Length: 207
Ligand code: 3PG
Image (tube, rainbow, N blue to C red):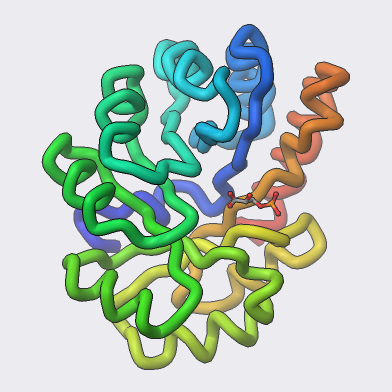
């Protein structure tokens, strides 16, 4: 495991789009009850930074920020307590800012050229997005072949049914996605279902 590895610390990373920051704590508790101690809160809604702040105060939970597009956002989310930043694509500015603030950055890649840029920035862990549309596990196997030192976190279209196929690849220590915490569940505050889906995902991941 690389010294700074994020992906080897939890095989399943839930991606959350929250509309109401008051839901952050019950959500975090529901994930922990299902055995998941890491969560990515996206900046796609205005509630994102407040939700990160709330989850950063939850003992045992590691919160990161997702959909981080520009370096300024790195400052805001790290000040709120984010311990890693995830982006849909590769931005050297975001990666450099995260590094300067001492948090891991997980930029998204979709091509071999993206991966070469990531290698050039000294990265060893990346997100693959949108993994399903890129061709699923077969596409990642092909993309990973020329990059033996890189670990991949597929995201975008990963489901309870497909996660194990991704995790079967040696280059994939973790997957991420929203299926455990989709917006319908959040809208209805179905925390028991979040816990059940989280526990099921962890069972699949550690089988
Ligand atoms: C991401 O940000 O990685 C994706 O939006 C998660 O994709 P999903 O909703 O298809 O799981």
